Amino acid sequence: MNKEIYTKPFFLGNPITVLVLGICSSLAVTVQLKGALVMALSVTIVTACSSLILSLLRNTIPTRVRIIVQLVVVAMFVILIDQVLKAFAYDTSKMLSVYIGLIITNCIIMGRIEAFALGNKPWPSFVDGACNGLGYGMILIIVAFFRELLGSGTLFGFQIIPASWYLENGGWYMNNGLMILPPMALILLGCVVWIQRSIQKELQEK
Amino acid sequence: MEYLNLFVKSVFVDNMIFAFFLGMCSFLAVSKNVKTATGLGLAVIFVLGITLPLNYLLYEYILKPGALAWLNPEYATIDLSFLSYIVFIATIATFTQVVEMFVEKFAPGLYNSLGIFLPLIAVNCAILGGSLFMQERGYANLGEAFTFGIGSGVGWFLAIVAMAAIREKLAYSNIPAGLKGLGISFIITGLMGIAFMSFMGIQLPF
Image (cartoon, rainbow over all chains, first blue to last red; front, side):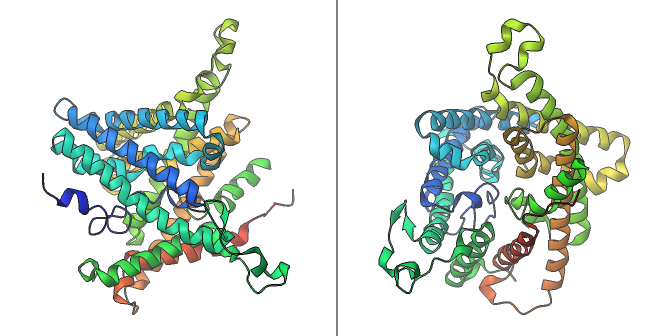
């Protein structure tokens, strides 16, 4: 198995910044690092496992109904994740609300299954799914890091910017409230894309 | 009147794209020109308007805790709501597939302009998101579910057509190389989201 399968999803073939997949259910969960981390892990597990299963089934599914079969397999894993989160991390599950369910329609999963798992052996498909999930998670975590730090002055809920710096305590610092609002996630993501494409010039669009 | 209020609210205030980022993947991929954007937008309104009431009925009479009581009072303790993801996505996928076949057979003209988008819609997060929001917010009756479905669809339609119009003009502007294409689209969507936030808290005066 070639090495590209491991490295491509992180940079040159990153699902979010290059392939433009899976933006839907991801941006609303990046207000806090914790939500982003849980989402990244859930997506990685679902992508890897469903790629594995569908790669095993790839020769038996009729093409006409393959989308429904894929969706059912993916939905099964998402239900598992949802139930586990509800049982062991109820607060996080409440915070992510419908976005856990929306992993089903996350285009990364369908995209990887269509583009890779249906034409490859199970083990490479599993690795490809997992690496794409992690590549997606990496971007989520970068965006969430800046949004939480600049928007609420915390990381993982711990205060990072000293309380004495704040205006109300006689300091000079103020949180950037705009960072908490949904549109800022998109603008930050635009900046991430900009930085990546300035470094990797071959990705630039004409 | 409360239907009108709900409609306006789901078009502008709870706009699927600008407030929840649902359906971003196809939003970014298909908004390159106004004509195709209109086609996809109409298809989304249609599918949301039909699948939302369908899923409402399924949830109300089969999945909700105690929903099976209409069959036999003994079933009142059954809670099938953990199955809702799989049922919702199966309804959506089946519906889009059936409509695609139907349109292909009986209205080839319509199929050429709209049909190609139907398989895309099965994995559009806005559609599943609509059903999940309907479940979470607990709309009171079929009329409300239908109004919410059509309203969200119209909101999505407005967003994608506006975006396509802006992107057509963008072709003539001078953008930094790394920001061209994807990067600037993210930032514009973010700015449009900020503009749409001015609708927040609107209540119609009746």
